Length: 172
Image (cartoon, rainbow, N blue to C red):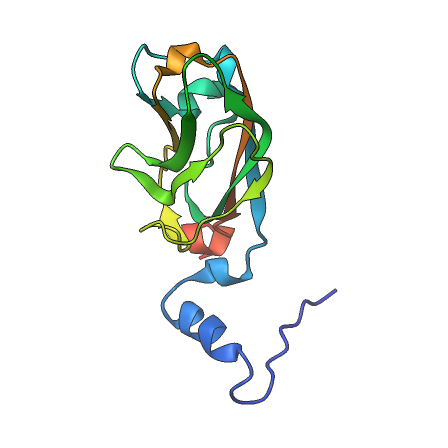
C-alpha cells in the first residue's frame, strides 16, 4: 500500500518540512520516541558534597540513550521530591558533560514539588542530531551534602527521533 505525503496550500506549515528535506534532514518524517529513566536518589552513590553529576548511560548500561538520532524535548518528572538531613533546597538539571544544564537548567525538586517539570531555557533545548549523546543529571543542594538525601524519585525523560534508513545511507 503506497504511503502519501499531503502537501497543503502555501503558508500552511510545509515550509519547515520542505526545508528539512532539502537540507538532508529526513528525520522530519520520523516519529517521536521517549527515553525515560526512573532514578531513585537514595540508590545513587551520593557524594559528600553539595553538587553531584550522574551519567545516565552509566546508570542504565543496558538501556543507554540511542545513538544516531535527533535528540528532542527534555522533561523531568518528580515522583517523590528530594529531602533529607540539613538540606534546605535541591535542584536538578539535565544536559551532558560539556553543558550540564544544556537541556534543562536547574529546577526545584525539593519537598513540596511534584509532577512534570519543563524548562525551555537550556542552551541545547531545541532538537539536534546526536551521534552519541550521553545524558547527565546534575543535583545541587543547599545547606547540606547530597549524601544526606533520604528520599527522592525523579524520572528523566528525553524525546528522540531515530534517523530513517535513507538518512543513514541504507536506502541509497
